[in-house]
Image (cartoon, rainbow, N blue to C red; front, top):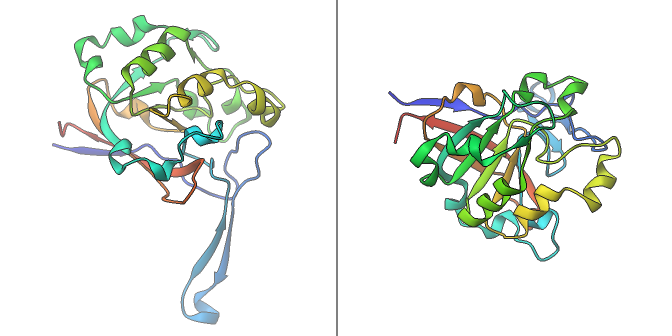
Length: 224
């Protein structure tokens, strides 16, 4: 029997945001009492909540999300459980290879760090296991459609996070420069998916010239 798991955090005015980024606003512009209907004005950054990074996020000549075919955002996926690793420890290929031959069939890899359990606390922006250079090179060689994580970033976060983004973000840059692989950040409930291959749907808001966009991400388990 197919099971559908929502891997998406809700967007709200008091939600956690990447350090230095303003939270969204959701203002009820028209209400039932005065107008007979309700409509909300929403203002938010393109990398709010569960979202997708496009190559254009860091590269002036990188692809924007609207330039990808819709097939880019759907595919076979695996969760890699990294919770036994120490904070800041490198994720090595050995951990991925424990999946066996199925690793070579998937189009998405999602890293389960356990960080989403800290959503709403300052510790959410703390240290997490990070991909080793070997893992990054494997992702680029495979030309995966996407990788995801239940944390704010694939790179370390500093206090001056926005300044850091201008000059570092090594893992982001190494993967996004290929224009092959999208990055999905701030996932949740990866621990509910299990260890088997499943279908992932990571559908970004369809905006023009998108360096990134909030996305509704779901796992469909036991349907392949």
